[in-house]
Image: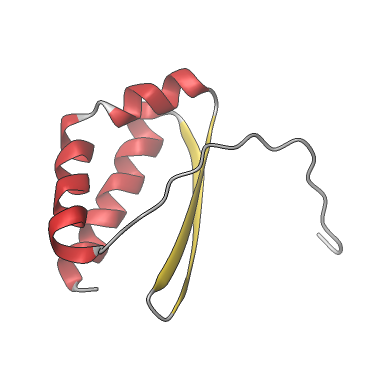
Length: 85
């Protein structure tokens, strides 16, 4: 990935959190594989985010410049626990 990718990703995170009530992001990379998780208050907030013009443009850039393919899953956390935190 390049500098523009990281700047775009940072802008999308900021926009999602400030304007669409995203609760946070986590991401990890392993070679060419990237996994990103975003947490939302509701599916309605996700739907609103998906319609944002700047986000749609960033997705088009991702398809044409950075990703050969991608896969999206929408999941609900049923239970969460951790050791030592």
